[in-house]
Length: 218
Image (cartoon, rainbow, N blue to C red; front, side):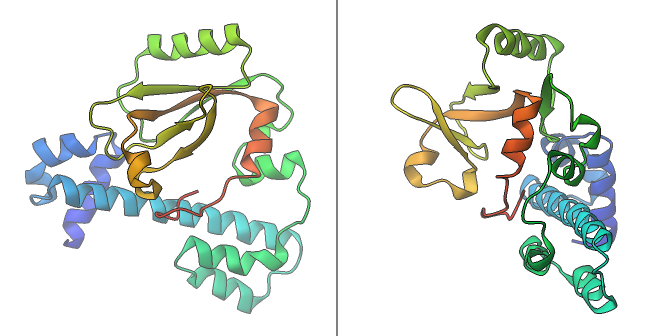
């Protein structure tokens, strides 16, 4: 891809256009980038922005400890993968983090002492109706559940995370498409990218979040 194509595609994505829309109706802007090229670009853009966000968090954390040497800072700035960043950060990572630290690292510091419920939406969830959100919150509150997920059964679930449930229909895990086995990819129950969660539980869950997956995403 040429730099001009990449810049044009990023501008459209940042304006809220979806990959299918751009690939079909904005080819004259992107220089004829097709759907597969746009998806690769979107994934890479998402990864790099997450990488930069994590880099900033790590730099701030080590600087707060007064351990950020020029050599370490140089290595952190040159790290080009999340795994490399985390390897460099490991010796400086606090062994026991407070709720406030977890919240700050996740960009959620104002919620550190919030006891209510929180609505979490993936950044790439398009065309959500207000009534859909209202229905999810109503079910969450009436059921008394700690976490409520928006799900769907799709005839073609390609690209979506699969919900893995037990025999008694309890959620065990969510597996991204690229990490799923053949049997898991055959499942049609997918993650809708929207959840309602009790805020105190959110920080317990955030401690367990990692990037051990095919895309290296957090």
